[in-house]
Length: 365
Image (cartoon, rainbow, N blue to C red; front, side):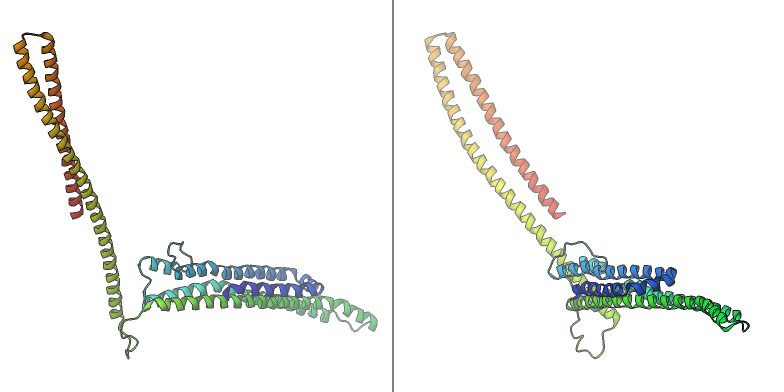
């Protein structure tokens, strides 16, 4: 319904423009009778029309923001008129207000709406003032010219010449009357047009205010038993209840964050347990490899011993000794690599344990 207010305003202005077009010759003569005052009146009227449209169209973003908020959309730019409400709701996880906060918000918004209409009301009064000022200005010219006509009358001479002189002298008073009535016409007509537009803007603001009041009534939290009580609760007690409710909301948010952190810690511990299990599996595999290498090393040592005994029985053979030395060096390198692999596994296990200790210490801190 409020969105149709600009439509009705435009229809009214079109009707006024059509009437002015039909009466253009008469209005042109009236305007030229006092172009200074009438031009000022039309300029003020134009400014007032622009201001009224700005007031009505300025409610559209506020209404859209309120509709999205009622639909559950909270991440949106804060409006201008409802900025206090946006800041208050941003501080709360759930949209809940006390009776005092809701009343303070409604009073502040009503005051802002009234401040927007103050200038338009002043312009309506200014149009009436300019019309009256032009009227009095024309009346002053009329009175001065009439005094000059009376002073210039002469009973001497022919009646026809006296009458012709009177007709010539009456042109100045009649011009003053035209100035007075033209200013009154434009001033009162402009005040009528701007007053109707201001009335429509007031209706749009009232409907917006009523919608906002109904929505805030749904969010207002009443203390238990407040409706049945014969007397209202004291202000300090209601403030204490509101403070307690805010503290409970803060505690609830803190518990929710703690639960999220606990879930994150549990997930990290599960991940660390999985990595430790993988490391244990790797250690088992490497232990099996080390056992196999140790067994092979023992078998090779026994084989080398038998070869050494056979070489001693066969006599000195440089080629056999060279092969034995190569086998001995290979076994030594194999033993060193086995030791290094074992140390690497132990160092990896130590690193994982240090990571676990830092994680637990960080969570406890």
